[in-house]
Length: 112
Image (cartoon, rainbow, N blue to C red; front, side, top):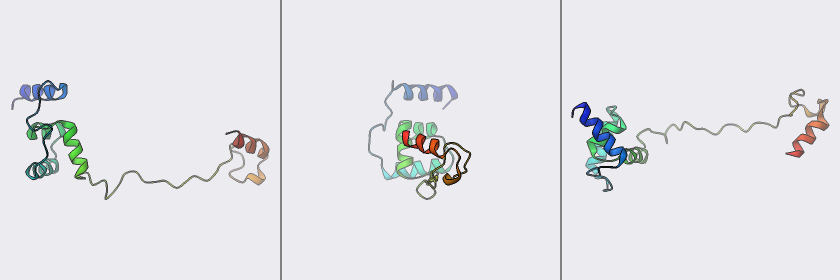
């Protein structure tokens, strides 16, 4: 495909003016294998969508479903340790007994 043809195909796909050939169909094992191959070769979502005649959201959903980013093995988001309660006055450094503003700090915590 020439650059202009690719541009037209992407524009039509995104504007939903043309239905992709495989849009809405169940994924075959062959298509899934081809998706994995293209993904591992570093092809972009749009290029894969055009080659497989699927929409970009369908490609992204299948990538997530097949866990090709391997997020289950190494999730990016990890639960952080809960922060200990802190005094709102920033003077006592968490030692509430020595805080000169203890009453005010306690009052502002209770107000929340």
